[in-house]
Amino acid sequence: MERRGFLRTGALAGLAALAGRAVARQAGATPSVAHGSAVPPFELAEATIDDLGAGLALGRWTSVALVEAYLERIEAVDRAGPGLRSILETNPDAMAIADALDEERRARGPRGPLHGIPVLLKDNVDTADRMTTTAGSLALEGSVPAEDSTIARRLRDAGAIILAKTNMSEWANFRSERSSSGWSGRGGQCRNPYVLDRNPCGSSSGSGAATSANLGAASIGTETDGSIVCPSNACGLVGLKPTVGLVSRAGIIPISHTQDTAGPMTRSVRDAAILLGAIAGPDPRDAVSAAAGTRGYADYTSFLDAAGAKGARIGVARQFFGFHSEVDRVLIEALDALRDLGAELVDPVELPEGSRYGQNEMTVLLFEFKADLNAYLAALPSGARVRTLADAIAFNERHADREMPFFGQELFVRAQAAGPLTDRTYRRAVRANLELLRAKGIDATVARHRLDAIVAPTGGPAWPIDPVNGDHYVGGSSSPAAIAGYPTITVPAGHVHGLPVGITFLGPAWSEPVLLRLAYAFEQATRHRRPPVFLPTLPMEPVPAGRPSDAGT
Image (cartoon, helix red, strand yellow):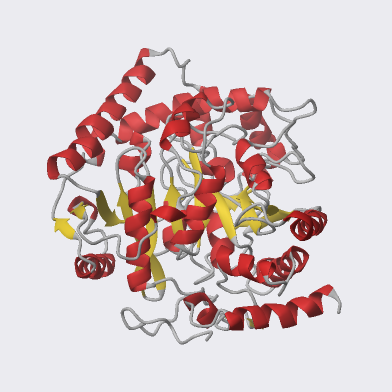
């Protein structure tokens, strides 16, 4: 039987054999309508890493067949049909890599849960292969780094297949003060898979949209402040931003060495735990990661417990409520669910207000972006189009018709004007914010109330794409943990007019095991993740609270 025919029969049989699990029940529920063009059913819709691994172990499909299926899905959903524009390029060697991993499985068995599993990488994560790494910018078009990022190498070592690079907000959304999230010169505007004229949010927009639309098993995003959790919120995903230093940043196009980190974006908490275990750990290429050798774990799935919220003390950061009444409704229901699970809520608890750290954060990012990006660009192999931030600014000016048709590069210009990292203004801003958000902020609040974690709304429902005015961000809770370098995880918590919104669990440094335990307990009890519906626009008729739209089903 040819490979595709084998997949069609084997995948359906495999998912049927997993009946009783939520993902299997949802496998045939792929929504259908966009721009008048049907989205074909997908055998692997909502399949988890465990589901795919079980099918591989039982011989129901091969990694080659999985790659072929996801590539066909990308063609049908990303480039045709809805036209998500979430994928910049696919790996031309993916089939050959899958074939070798299939042979290795037959000869020696799997390396682990990611063996032969197709995953997606954000386009600011270096891969030394036949794909490029550009941060979405035409200035780096064709750029191939000299070596893999540490994350890419660890994923390959775990047996994962890097299937594609995802679109992103160009330069991780640090180019303009009036950008449209998800837009890049290389990829154009990425769309939200739930409602196509809505924004996928954050710089990891392509990773969010693609994973939600089942274009790969899971993805890696990066965050400086909000760029994992915001697209996960808007695209109905679990997004985990680790403690800064748990995951190496070596080989990732930077903004800020104080705040940057990479992390999993997945359709389930367990998948996030699996992916985190594969990429976490110390790396001599990133000195900040040294502590991960004693504070990190190779396997985070051992912390997952459906009863894990029982007896937990969880603080409620009410200061992040109030920006949207329907988001408040979803979060109140989420708090009730946590109480039902046996958690003790301390309501409210307070974190420092944004007025006390917002300007300092921008100062830090401007100084560090100039220094860190210059270092990255200088290390590129010979032939790179740009070697400095100043070169990138000049490139954008020369190619303004393609690079700046909707918004400019004010943040680039401000960063170029920043001084060295020895500057007193910069050093004062770093010191003030870390003290405020760590010792006097999250750490103090957790200690004062004897908390296991703090919860808050992740963000609002996705806003309409608006290239003229830019993003319409209405509220969220990412900044305290982002500035502190502390971990957060967002989990789907409900829907507002059919658009997903999430709840954030945050805690002190290295508290990923606790956050994963609580997030898993909440997820298993509520199961708010629903596959996207690919609506062209939000229907004018109101969608009843808490119920999915009937359109596209």
